[in-house]
Image (cartoon, rainbow, N blue to C red; front, side, top):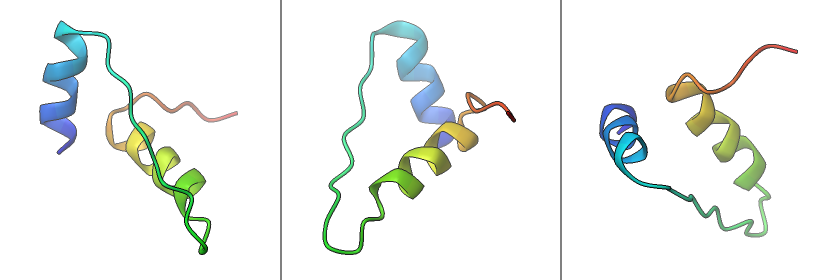
Amino acid sequence: MGKNMKTITAKAETFAYFNNHYNAKAPTNALELLQMMGAMTES
């Protein structure tokens, strides 16, 4: 998935939506996607 997302984001403005259901996994999933794409930096 990461490779396909990088190809798409290089060609067009791209947004991702995460459903924050009762287990509240959306923040974790968003951070995982950023990490897979190499867009996350250590702070």
